[in-house]
Amino acid sequence: MLRDSEIAVADNPPAEPQPEPAPLAAAAALTALLAACGGGGGGDAPGPAPAPVPAPAPPPVGAAEAARFLAQATPGAGKGEILAVQAGGFAAWIEAQFALPQSQSHYDWLAAHGYNDEKYRNNATGLDNTIWRKLIASPDGLRQRVTLALSEICVVSVLGVSTPWRQFAVANYLDLLENNAFGNYRTLLRQISLSTAMGYYLTFRGNAKANPATGSEPDENYARELMQLMTLGLYKLNADGTPQASETYGQADVSGLARVFTGWDLDVSGLASPLPPDVHRRPMAQVASRYESGSKSFLGTTIAAATAAPAALDAALDTLFGHPNLPPFIGRQMIQRLVTSNPSPAYVARVAAAFADNGAGVRGDMKALVRAILLDAEARDLVTASAPSFGKLREPVTRFLNWARAFGAASAGDTWSVNDLSDPATKLGQSPMRSPSVFNFFRPGYVPPNSAIAAGGLAAPEFQITTESSVAGYVNFMQLAVSGAGIGDVKSGYPTLLPLAADSRALLAELNLVLAANQLSATTLATLAAALDSVAAGSDSGKLNRIWAALTLVLASPEYIVQK
Image (tube, rainbow, N blue to C red):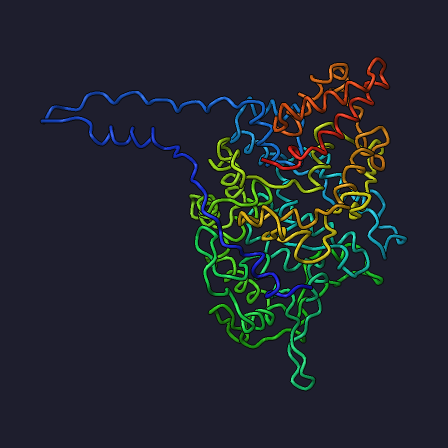
C-alpha cells in the first residue's frame, strides 16, 4: 500500500487559476440599488404597497443542455429523462430525485435471491449482481451516481474483506452509502466506522489497546486513512481547496486517533454459530477488555481518560467533521467525480461553503452539496465547458452504465449476471467495490506523466487506469455489450432506435444527443455516417447490425469519452 509521502505531490497539486464564470447577479444587484434609492420626501402617507412581482421563470433548457446535465448527475439517462429535465428545469429535477424512494437494498436482494445459502458462505457470489442491478435499473439515478462517487472516496473493496459472507458485508456497506447519499456526511462517517466491512478492510476489527508487556500498539490503518482519504487530506487547505504548506496531521495524531478505534468487533449477541450473514447488518459492538480507556490526543483535541468508547468515537468524528479542511476536501473530490477534474478554486469555495452551511446552519448536508455542485455556474455554463481545462475522462464503468441506462438494458430473469469487469484486456478494467487499494481505482490528483495534461498543470484522475490494453479491451467489451449477445443476461432490444436505423444520420443524431450531449463534431458524425452506410439496413437484422455498429463507434469516440 502506498504511504502518505508517496502520493502527497500527486494528490495535492497546486490549483491552476482559471477564469471565473460571468456574474449572474447583476440584475438582482441593480434591482436592490434602485430600491435603496427610492422615494423622496416629506411627510406624505405612503401609498398602497405594490403588488409582488412573480419570480421569473427559469430559462428554457435545451435538449443538449439537459443531456449534459444528466451525464453529470446520473450513471446514464435516456430520452425520457432528457425531456423531463427540459420540462421542469435542473433544480426541479434534482428535487424530484431527492423525493424518490429507494429501491430494494443490496442486502435484502441477496437474501431474497438465496445467496444466504451455506454454499455461498466463503465467497462473494451475488455481490456483483446486485451492484449492477441497482446501477443499471434503479430509477433514482442521482442517488446511484452519488453513491458510486462516495464508494470511490470512502473505499471498501471486497478484495480486502476477509470474512465469511463477505458479499453481505460489502452489500450492507454499499447500502449505508446509499442511505446517506442525501443525508448528512457526519452520520455516514459514524455508520461506516462501525460497519463490519470497513472493520475488516482497514483491519481495525478486533483492534486491541496497547500492551506494554509485548510492545504491541493499536492498529493505525483506519485512523490514518480516515483522515487522509475520507475527511481531511494530507495538507491544510484554504477554503477554496488550494493547499497550504503545512501538513494536516502527523504521526502522533494518527497514534492518538487509533486509540479511539480499539475494542470494536462483531456484534454476535444472540446469534447462532457458525455466524449467519446477519452479523454484517449489525454495527460493530464494544469489547471492553480491548478498549483503550486512557486519554486520546490528536489534532489539538484530547478525549479524557475513562470516556466510554461510543462517546469517544463521537468526539473523534466531531473533531474530524468540524475541521476546516473537510468541506473543500470532500467538495472538490465530489466535483471531480461528477463534473470536472480541475474545478476552479472559486467553484470549490462555493461548493465547500454550501457543505459547511446549507443555509440553515447545518454542516455536512449532502443535498446541499449535490445542489451546489450541479447547479453552479461553472457546471452549467457552456462557455466554461468549452475551455480545454474543463471536463473529465468518463470512467469505464460510467460509459457502460451510460449505454445500459440510456437504452433500457435489463435482465430478463432479475439475475444481473454481469459479474466482475476488472480485467482491462477483455472488460472494463474497473468494477464497483473491487478497487485494488484504499486509494480507489485512481487518485484524485493523478497527472499522466510526460503528457500535455501534465504540461498544462492539470490533473486527470481516470487516466491512471487508461492504458493501451484497457483502450482496446473497452472497445471490444462494449462491442459485445451493445450487440444481441449482451453481457451476461443484460441486453437491450433498442425499440427507440429501430425506427431510426434506416437513416444513419438520424440514428447518429439520436446517439449524439442521448450519449454525448451533442459533443460529437460534424466531422466525426460525417465519418461515422459514411461507415454506417456500408451496413445494409433493409431488414430487421440489418437495422440491428447498424444500431450495434453506431453504438460501438459513438462509445469509442474520444469526443464522447471526454465528458465536457
